[in-house]
Image 1 (cartoon, rainbow, N blue to C red):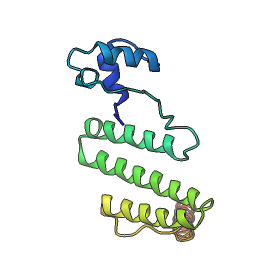
Image 2 (cartoon, one colour):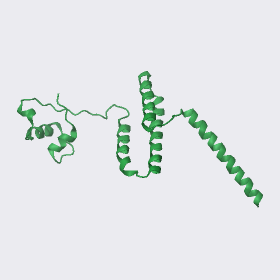
Image 3 (tube, one colour):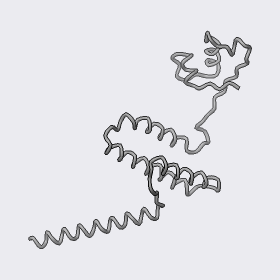
Image 4 (cartoon, rainbow, N blue to C red):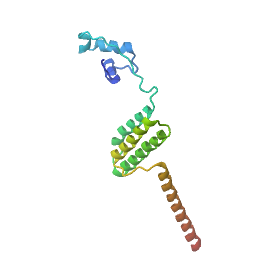
Length: 158
């Protein structure tokens, strides 16, 4: 079996953005240095529909596009750190969503992916949703205490 990437075939063909099996085979036959044809290989081209019935593929595409842009787009350290934090949050929230719909095999993969996120960004810990909500509640309560205290001080000044 001969595996050829779509980009490689498009380079051979020139301009076509949407090649079909026939045009790809013709382009491959026309290539001057195609030793496959010269050696009598039978070439059968078949497209593999990678996005059909495979969950998570669009997410992977989105993350890969983000990573490509990241190196050029974010130069200063502070912005890069903020972006990295956002990306971690996106990936982990995605894991939490998948957690609800998983089977036993998926559970093992999810645990591995969360660990992979920790290792990739050197995160000390990723908390579960309950702990995150608890921290948010504490922060909001503290914020409300500060607001009340500020209001009391303003009232005293008047």
